[in-house]
Length: 469
Image (cartoon, rainbow, N blue to C red; front, side, top):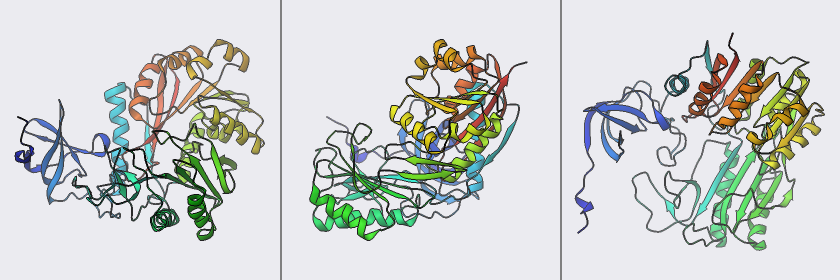
């Protein structure tokens, strides 16, 4: 006979004092020699917490009764806080968020890499902590999730919003979102309400039925707006109603696109993008350079802080006009192009071929003639023949994905022995791992974090490495 789940009551710990911020935006507490990660808590809270998950070495808990709020708390500004999974630190004062992010970098360096920079420079916070993103992707679903207490809507209402954490088949229907300006909210609400009024079906991820799958909205500081609608099959009537309606309702939109996706996943990188109206790309400007952004292009999602990040990398690199620079994991070439005026030449390497095509076009658009870009697996492209052909780099800029650099790439860098290495990372843990390997020949001169994503635990970090004496 199976366990009677109705009689199971998760363990409750009373009057727990919450400790520091920890992994995944949670805070850590210790109860009876047990490590407990508490969701949506603040350091200094005193609360009754109820266990919601058990792992080998720790417990996971929710706050059931907040008895004494921490001084680090502040009022949240979004009605969906605690449910959608984004902006997990909305309840924390921004100055404290920055302190926690700085500490995350230091903890990763000390605990994972066992490395210590000569100097930690203060984190650079964001000027805007709301409506800072330039891209958001929403998901359609015919099964809406309604709250944070595991209660599903029995009416199976339609939703257009974000996936609920750890539930691939449930989407939270958004009334508001503060990640982008209000125009993005207006676009999302218009599409949802129009689709429902016209009886256009929302996708069912389990049954693989329904027409509307995803909605991507992008915008730039130049006033360009892109909307991409993903549908499961060609339906011209629905396209005319939704995209045609957007064209009439929101004349500021400059690019209306769609893809037909009949796969079992939502990725669009292998799909053809169709232009319904307007341009097939939008443009952004960072410093003196203009970048073309297509629907599949990777571009830093916080434009204002992207300039801050690029300026920091440029400062650390301290390029000279006679130097050869390799930009590893160059993406669409934005960092390479941004630094092009200061170097003899810059060679960019990137795995994604479409990104390399964009990088070449961006260089051409900006009249940059000393940047060249190559596509391929980094550990295979960066070989002796490549270096002989393009010249030994004086400086290496590297901005790898979250997984960090492959060990073979690190080994090659150590073999090349550049004068300076600037390592930009979106994951301090893998950065720390790689820095430990580079420590065979290099010391960390300085390290500085940049906050690209306010109200989340994510942080970017930039380090300068110099050869050991």
